[in-house]
Every structure is written in C-alpha cells, then in structure tokens.
Length: 330
Image 1: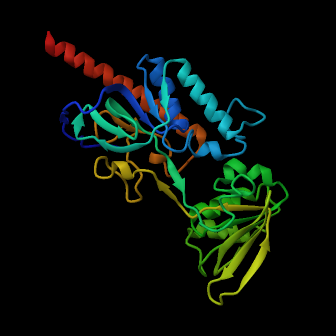
Image 2: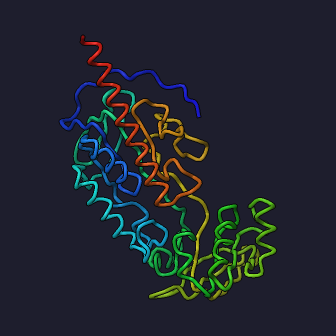
Image 3: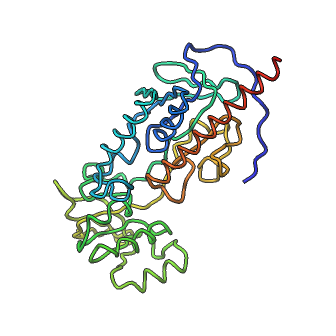
C-alpha cells in the first residue's frame, strides 16, 4: 500500500516532563510485543495500558492456539508473561489512560490521566472491542459460556449445543467453524434473511449441524455458573421463549478503539487505522498494530507479530532520524 505522507510536523512547545523515544498505547499482545522488541533495542519504551490491562485476550479463559503452550494458557496468564518479558529488557508499563494525542507536532504530545508525554515515535495498539448485545447475563457469563471468538473457545464446546448471534459473514464463518466441535450450532438473526455472502449461506444451509432461527433477538442470557439458555423475543409477534444452549457466541461486529486518533491518521470506513505492510500509518513515526488495524484475523499471534514489526520500524525510524541529524551537524 502506498501513502502520501503528511508533512513533517512543526516543533512542539514543551508541554510535559516525560520525553519517550517509543511510546506504546495499549497493553494487549500487539502492544507488549512491540514493547519487547523496542526494549531489546535499548530504547526504554513506555506502555500505557488503558483500562483493560493486557487487552481483550486477557478475558479469554484458556488460549489453546498460541504456539509454545501445548496444554493451553490462560489469557490473563499469557498477558502477564508478555509484560514480564518486556519489562525484563527495560520496558516500562504504566497503568494509565490516554486522554488525547496531538500528532501535528514533533515530538508527539500524549496526554494521559496522570502525565503528559512527548514521544519521538508512537505505536498505536488500542485494539478493537467486540460489539455486545447489552442484555442481562451477557457480561456476567463471559468466560462461562458467552464468547466473542469461536477460534479461541470453540474447543470447549465439544458435543455441546451452542447458538451464534448474528447474520453477517463473520457470524456464518464462526458458525461453520464451531461445527467442528459442537453437536448443533443454531444461528439467531433478527431479520428474515441473512446478510452474509451467498457462498457462506449455501455452506451453512448444507451443513446438517447448522440450524436457523429468524426474526428473533436475544433478550437475556440465562445461567448462574454457566450458560443454560437464552431468552428469545420474536420481533414480529413479540412472543418470548427460552432456547436451551451451552454456549452463546456473539458476532455482531467489532468497533476499533480509534476515537483518539480521528482526523489525525488515515482510517477506513469502519474506523480501522490504515497501515502499509510495514505497520506505518500516513504520519511518519506513527505505527499501528493489532486489532486496531486488523479487521480480518484478530488473533493473539497475528497481533503480536504486527506489534513486533511496528517496533522494528520504529527503531529504524529513530536510527534514520539520528543519522540525518548527525549528517546535518557535520
């Protein structure tokens, strides 16, 4: 992907007392992998965690598909290991939330709740949030039958009944994936026709494990220690009923956490930050990694790889900038 890079920002007036060579916003797999690589380059990176320490991956009960853990690893445990490894090489991790950024000046100004930072390079790894139904029982039963990732959690539902909420491509792709494990997969859609592509609809219709409930919405997720059912409301008649299930997989879209950067870096129509293959945004010295720039894969391993790549490019950027300054002073 080619970019028309923005002009070099003007020198900023000092607004804080914390200069940072590499500042990482977000502490999920992408952010901590970036911190590890920048730390090993002896750049003393700073990671601002935001309110969700270690990102959404930390909410997953067990991650079975990250290499090096044949027996699986807890999401929170993996995040903690990522952080310890980055800190071992000199990364700093601060539990702080960014309130605003200014990418029109150099160094970039990042105002967090507790401190103002001046960053020579910035790696954005703020992730994307799964859209939620917002119904009773949903939040309480996350990790106890409610999931937003079939690839992450499908294995736990071998020979069990699950429902998939949604009607787009992602919902049917994940529903078909779940047929590897579940005895039945019931797709619940609020309309009378799916939005997914024709090929996916045909594959789902031809799969004997996939069932469909149309014109229905989930109004409650039922269970105490584990999901036992969902309550459905018919959008045409208003009638309600309970549908027994062992798991609820929700695929009604993702929202990238990019509101801080609107109008400052290029984004696509869905709000994902645009990068080239080197994780570079259209602003020199600013990189994006992980789900904030990835609407397709959304996996721990791909996010970590993007974070590593972003850090390596940040190192290259800083080395090139230093070389230019030395050459100019000779």
